[in-house]
Length: 286
Image (cartoon, rainbow, N blue to C red; front, side):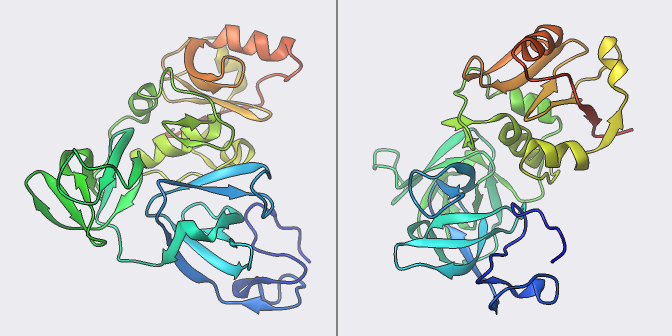
């Protein structure tokens, strides 16, 4: 077979996505079933066991294309938005619902069973969650599933933030969580992906993917003083967002928080801990 990235290729020896026919060797090829995530955040794991490594999370309203469902309650498939492949609990999915009309524009809001903030929430919705809104009544958006979300926490699909760094700054002080994409916990590349989504820029999930695909390369020697707000600084396995020419915002596994600190301090610390030098710098615009 051609050498495909397994993180982005729904292929195993026994089964593969139908669109890979003729490209990989598999026992059978299947047409995927488009399903909608109904949990606030659904784990996507490397293996179909609850203690397997968490690779990423799918947010409420995202589409997950299912190629196989197991009797043990796992669905193997691929996220439609960024192409990530893995195993998700089948309980987090329903057959595809209506196209989303709105997305969550705050770090966290709640899905209620009725139009009252006194009701216990059904789910917590994170920044970037997708919702289909049928009507707005008494300050609540009524969803296609008959649930309710505080309307002022939503914006229409197609309405975007102006500055993804400003979005990232809202996450300051929140916990680091490997594979996370929500305000309950987020990792470095998840922070970049979620914040770029808020300005309408699609991004792949992992740092090595982002370092090859986001924006345009900037010479590494510009770390000496010509960096701009919004530049992305990459190391092997890590990424941070420049707030200005010398401050970097990142989800730090060192502090286990989203923090803002001197780029030089981060650079020197990563080098001293054996993480290597800066590998690349990317800028959204030339």
